[in-house]
Image (cartoon, rainbow, N blue to C red; front, side, top):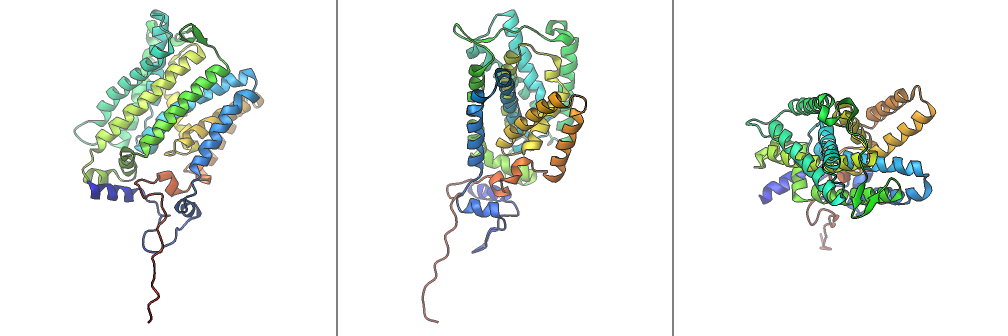
Length: 370
């Protein structure tokens, strides 16, 4: 498979990467990457630094809002793995998010289970199970599934779950499940505020680092090739549908984790958490920030939620129209998202292998007489 690995690595190379002896890079971002100067770690570090100091400068109610945004960023991260790296357009990502939220709410209501050591694993397990069931049906058929089939299948699953929750009295119907008690760790209760914020931020950072390791591994190399040219990946012997099912399950697990945190932070769950509107919302997060970068999903979530909060407070009658126009302009003029302003194509795709980050050495020439 050594030759296959080299071929897959070449699939992800964008047009700004020029191969051949002595050929210069065709763009500034690619040249900076070849020289060893990476923009992505700088962007990630700045985002983390801002997130760490937010509770010290925000009022209490804004800290609660920021906590909600961090949880939604975790949710967006799950979708970026599925779409940005595997090319699976899932319009049902909220199904895993909401299913985990309802599941942990039932544990708290019926069994009085609120320990974070049980709730978070339970939410992840629910998201994983739902993703395996739906992904197995949509992705692991006898023949490869088309993009339209998977998109409509996930959309149908999300809509069906929404209607089921609205009509099931045990789940509270239209009203959902209210009055969820706070998360606990022993005798300590996680109340809304800085402690809950830093706990959620720590979870986001850990999951982000794990995702970064995953997409820069050999498995991530296969995903990069899958996103660029699925038929060629299959020709090299990779089982493309199995790779899709695996990353689909990983995305469902992360969405389940986010859903369980969201349910306890908000104190109630409702059918919209499962529905199509919420699934479309996370698509906009990733599309706005930049898909296939991980940090783009986080940035897109923060900006959209922050702008929505400000517009709804200052322009209550027309704020959805203003936000829609803003999103449309970004998508029209920057289809790769906001991160494309600072990241070149080579850095977006990533570098793989031991010598991937080393610039090629100039060829030595002797001083032989003509």
